[in-house]
Length: 187
Image 1 (tube, rainbow, N blue to C red):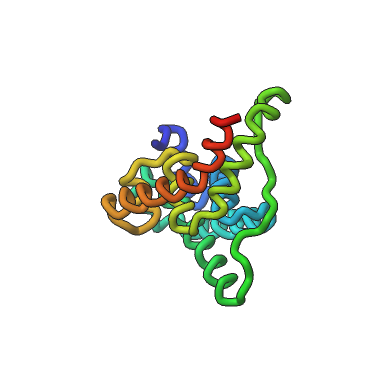
Image 2 (cartoon, rainbow, N blue to C red):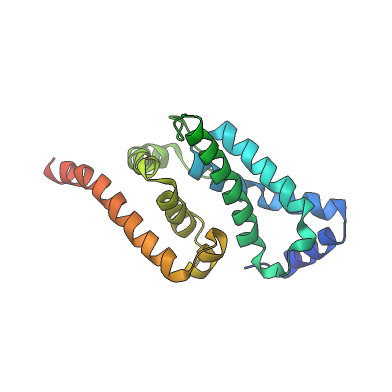
């Protein structure tokens, strides 16, 4: 949900205020980058993609008719950039998922990092193995905390299609994680 101060910032940015545009960029950069990173699993590519998406978004702010949908609108622009890259890589015979990823963690103690590291790595690898459409709905729902309606807007889909895709994505993810849970319960 957009705050009153963010709404004011958006209106000023739409009117051409470059400072307001810069402030919007700063406000949403991290979220846009993390979304691209979770879908592309390549930090350099995600930075480029997020940068391109933010530039496109700022250039077309005047087309945003519903200011309260700013976040969904931004994620939709990033999504389009990401899937263009994935289609190009697939066409060129390049593996769409890179094998490295920067870990962006704030406000954690070293002990928490150690305790969460193994589980996070297993989940990250399982997410990498999902097909992009499944990974996308998991990321939007679980990481971005979007509602089904918001996910439908971002993916240009229906709520029922989103629910179905999310159901199947979770099922595949659970199947991938099942050996880990079996192994842990028998140890």
